[in-house]
Structure formats: structure tokens, C-alpha cells
Length: 398
Image (cartoon, rainbow, N blue to C red; front, side, top):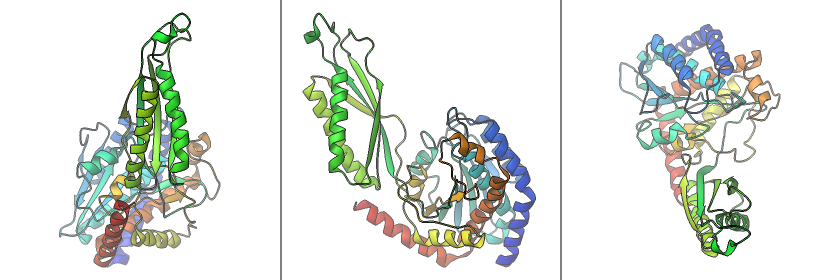
């Protein structure tokens, strides 16, 4: 079957099922489930994919709300992954749009399933919960879920202008615990060792470190535990930090300086310090010029204006996938150019409008076309892998 016929079939399925999947997205918006608790959401998606004919494993990888749905063509070929996000935020619901762009991915998978017989190769639709916290894609990348994939794709919602060349920061979430010794703060403070002083000094050291790191580095933290009463010298103080940088390799180097700051603060205050990761570490998203150019062309095909990435846009576990295989996560405007900041109630409300539902249709077609291109075009795949190799080598030198 010619590519034009395959595209027509894909579009027919997307158009015929858009209303149904938009209703599913709106249901998720009305019934948000935060990271790690996406039980009803994941079960709903799995039911849709199973009924369509995918071979589904659920739960997956000992993650209760993760799944993998797969299908293979009749002949050997390329392998592509469509990523599905669906966790919400505490209190403000789907203010990052996972209900909508997760549904886009599902709809794209539904449309590709019937044409896999003709294309050959393999398609996996991967349910990746907890992006807002531990990031299931991290463990999945480490444990080989994306090994052998030639391409991984998802779109992410935005309100304003679409961005194809999305850039994110590598990130570590680290908790520092300072321990001292209690004493009466008025009658015998000299008998104590003030853990809060250790943490305070560490904060000051981090502030001083900022002038000696690259401009793309980010360091921000909070006091999560700082004593129990004013008349007791605190024996324990805890701070939580996010450390970010444009490349994983540079972040690792920067963290050695951070740990030295913690050790110095403990030494100066006669306290002890330990640290641990309280959330999964994220890698940066590696650029892939070939894949991103393809996505820009697809956005243009649907009349969607694309603007350059204004800078590094937080952190995402899709970065870990991009270190395993060529991967992209363009941002698609769901609000017709109307701007709303993510993680706000206004953003959540924008995901359930008619404009958002139209974006769901276009987004699913863009995802499906990108996967079809990869499955059918060996030269495209070779160029994407060439870019991948170049970027991984550059990242290692940072």
C-alpha cells in the first residue's frame, strides 16, 4: 500500500475517534490523579488499547500504573515508541496538560495499529506515569524498555506558541540532612551542636557557588525541617534542593562542588551531614536535528506556527529516553495562541476547550505521521542515528 493510502487510513481513524478520545481527556481532567496514583486513568487507557487489538502488559515493570502496548507488522523493520503521560498535579489537577497530550499519544497509536501490517516493524505505546515526580521514563530507560527503538515521540501541551526544538535541563533532586546535638538554647547552648546552623551555612555556600557555575546552571532549595522549638538547639535540619544544568556530564561535575559545600558547612558547625536523592535524576534532552526538522515540517503541514525555544524549559524524564535512542518532545499550542503559564488553573481549564480538542486531533496526526515516516524511510532513520551519535559524543565532553 502506498504512503498516501496509509496516511488517508490514519487520518480517517483519527477523525472518527477524536470525539471519543477528547471525552476521555476531559474525563481525566475532571478526575485527576497525581503521580503514582494514576490507577483509574491508566486502567481507562489500557482498556482502550486492549480493545483496539494491542498486546498489553499492565502493570508493567513493577510500576502499578505503567503499561506497554505493542504490535508488530508482518515483516521485520524499524521500531518506534509513542510515550504516554497522564499524571496530574496536587490541588490544581491537569495544569500541565497530561490529560490532553497523553490522549494524543493514545489516539496516534490507535490510528497506526491497523497499518502496521503494511509498514512492518514494531510499534510500542508506553504508559509512563509520575512525570511530575519520579519520572517512570528514567527507570524504563535504565532497564532497557527503549533499547532497539529507532525513534521515540510524544507532544507536550503548551498555551501560546508551539515549539519543536524543546530543550530541557538535566536535574538531580537531593535532600541534605544535618545532624547535631540538642541542648537548652538559653541555659547551656554551648552543650549543643546546631544542625540548623549547618544547613544555613550550606545555603550561603550555595549562594556563593552560583557565581562560579555556568549561566545555564540552576540551584534552588527549601528548608523542609528546621528544629522543633526556639528553646531547643536543633539536632536535625533538612533541606531539599533541585540542581540543574544543560548537560548531565556538567551537572555531575557541579555536584562535586555542591557536596564539598555541604561537607564544609558541617565541618564549620561541628555537625554531620548526609544526602540522598529524593526523586529520580533526569537527563537533559539531546537535540536531534533530523528528527526535529521532520517535526517542524509536520507542524507546518497542519498550519501550526513554530517559534524557537526561548531557553531551557525545566526538566523532563524524556531526556533519559533521548540518551537511549533518537527522541523528540515538541510542545504543541492547545489554546489558539492564548498564553497561559503551565502549572496554573488557567492552563488546566484550557485543556478542556473546543480549541484544545482540535489540537488533540492535529497532534495525533503529527505523531502518527512522524512514526510512519520513521517506519518507512531507512535514510531518515540513518540520519537520525547519525545525529544521535554526534550529540551523545558532544554531551560526554561537557
